[in-house]
Structures are given as C-alpha cells and as structure tokens.
Image (cartoon, rainbow, N blue to C red; front, side, top):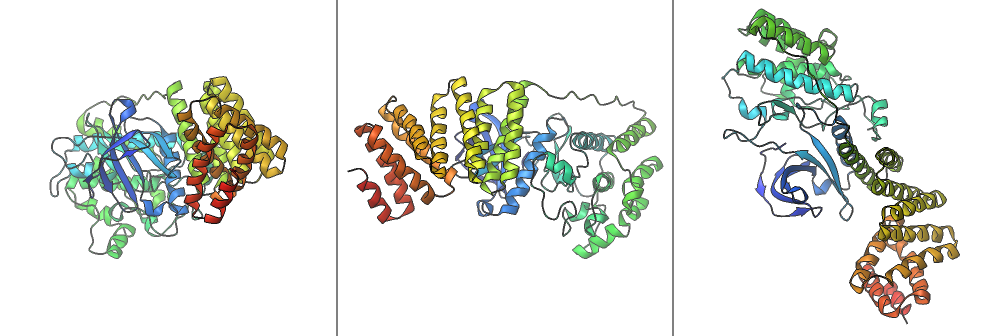
Length: 511
C-alpha cells in the first residue's frame, strides 16, 4: 500500500523497529513507508492518524474499527494484506502495519488510477481480469465478515501488484452490521449503520450513499460498475462540475445513460446495466452473482474458461499468534480512549487465541491487560485476580521481570483497597528483586514500574500516592544505595508534574 500525496523523506524509527523512509500525508491520516529492522529490512507501510487527532475519540475509534476489520479479513491474493497492529504505549500511538506494493514501470504509485489514462480505453480482457479479481477479493471479505460494505471502491483504492493482479485497499469507510461489529470487539459508532452524511468518493458513490440511506453490498457493486465502465470508455462514468450535479447524475441514472452511449458488446452492457441500476434492489445482490456473470462473459466474449477460485485459509500457529497480538494492541488503544468494555473484549479474545495456541507470553499479557482494565473500572478485586494469573504465566514462561512488575500492580490494587499489609507484601517482592539485579538495571526497572503505576492510576498525581507509600516500604526493606536510584526516578517523575511542594515531600521521605 502506498500513496503519492505530500511525500517527503524521513529518518525516524517507530516502535524501535520500523525505519521510516518516506512520509505520506492525507486528510486525517499519515502513511509511513518503512523497512522492518527485525525482519531484515522487509518493506512495510505503517498507517495511522495525524498527531492532532490523538485526543479525538471518534477518529481513533474509527481507525481501530478499520484495523480490526482489515486484520480479521486476513490474507487473500486480491486484498492488500494487513499484517498486524503496533501499539506504542509511551506515546499512545497505534499503527496498522500493511503490505507495501512497489510502483511498477515508472508509474507514480501502484494504484489502478496511475494506470488509467484519460481517453485511453483498457481492453475488455484486461478489464474483466481486474474486475474479476476485485470481485473475488470482496467476495472473500464478505465471507469473512458478513454484510461488509467497503463504501469507497475506486481506482485509487485498487492496487496493482507485481504479478499484475488487483488488490483492494483502504477499509477506512467500511460499514458492517452492528452485531458483526460487536463480535469483532469494535465500538459501534453512534451513526452506524446509516451515516449522517454521504461518505465516499463522489464519482463512484452509489445513489443510496448520496441520499444517506443504508448501504449494502450492492452499493459496492455499483461502484465497481462505475470503475469498469471508466476503464472501457476512457472517461469518468459520472461527470459534473459541482457536487450537486454529480449527486443528481448518480441518483437519476446518469451511469445507465453513459452505458447506452458506449460502444460495447451487448453481453457486457447487460452485465454493467445490472451493476449500475439507480435502484439498489435491481442490482446484483451478492459478489457470488457478480463473479458468476464475469466468468460467463469470459466464455461468451473471450472464449476462455475460468477456473473456480480455490483459496486456502491460513490457520498456522504463527498467523494466529500474530492475530492475537494485534487484537491485544487494539484493546490497549481502546483503553486510551476509555472504551473499557471493548478493551476487555479484545483482551479476552487475545487470551482465547493464546490458550488455543499454547502461547504463554501472549496469555500473560492478556491477563495483565484485563487486570489493568478492571483496575481502571475501580474493580480492584477482579484486577488482582487477573494480575495474579499474569504473574503465574510469566513465571511459567521464565519471564521473572514481568512477573515482578505485576506484583507492583497487585500492590497498587491492594493499596487502593486499603489493604496495606498485602500491598506491602507485594511491594517488598518488587524491592527484593531490585536487590538481586545489577545496578544498571535498577533504574530502568523502576521506570517501568512507574509507568505501570501511572497507567493503572490514570494520572501522575494518583500514582504519586502509591509511590510515596512504596518509598516507605523501601526504607524498611531496601538497600540504601539502590534507593538512590529509585529517588532519581521519583525526582524525574515530580519534575514532570512541576509540583515543587510534593517534590520536597518526596525528598523529605529519603531522610
């Protein structure tokens, strides 16, 4: 997946893993063309939203829905692949990691748009090939997610791969039935499934998109018809100087009039007529029907026999684990916008995948995040149960450091419950661990623990109470030399707050 808008070079590294080569800015989004350092500089695309939308709950929820849907669709030869999501906890950013398709033969980008030249027609054979591939991609997507409507099929969102095959991209405007969205653990937008205003790209929007009626699979089929006719005639299917003129042309059957003027075989006209009807009920209703008719056109017009599609689902352990990690990242991002029930559902789904694949590390992460979600809800007893499960899993997988960090989380929860004896017991385990590791690791460990406390508490000021209590416990059980390291962390913590009175209070505790 690439684009050519506002491209500029960049040398930043995202998530300590993705080295950025170029940055592409769109309306609300940003696309980074990167290489994955952990995968021998494998080329990928990272998609996210612009920094100014980081606090916009609706933008973030829409992006998370797109990520969940795209990853759920999985692999198909006619869909740009979404590998996974990458959540950066320190900045609260989330990225969708996508397949990068190169531009070929000197083209500006790999989109179908870059291959179309005004007034130049595309052959019937090549057109049928591409629309059959788009049809099969959409058929697969709607098989994986019933009722899915792309809502923005256009040449710019259809890419041409190195093998010449069409790949569907950009699921940002997708609509999905509410019950399916809930199964995907997405937050259902308040205007779903009928949008409050037309959404899409004007030249390819179905009549019902313009008049804000409920869209369906036949809406995408209309868009495909517009693309197909454009390829065959060398000009836009719908024309107009102003948005209102374009809307009226769609609604009043302008696409059919354009089709009547075209010099095309009657069989092809008959097929396109069934795609471009203004009344959605008079169009093809399923992608299976569209595929069947295109295969017939191959037979009638080109005297070619097309073999049925045979797609094997990727159910390998590696793919399933990656899916679980992605769902976990989406859950972490939901926590950022305080959609806690959706976050918990994501964590539980990731946990189920981890159990099925016997992947201890993912299972521990899922339990720890469920604990964090319940902590944010103020349900501290439930949080403790899941933190303790995370500790057990981390110990089982040999990751003692993360197990000890979760003892800090347990201590924080007991502290909130007012059970200071149990809080002290868990904090002591944390302190005893720091007495066993090297001096160099102590400060880094306490920084991680501090991040945990802030994440749990929801604010630095709430976390401060717990850390002052932790300091009291360390005075009893800790080593004086190592306490200096801990105070360094608290010093930076208080400087970040900018509260000199509380900073003085912290320093007084070190006497």
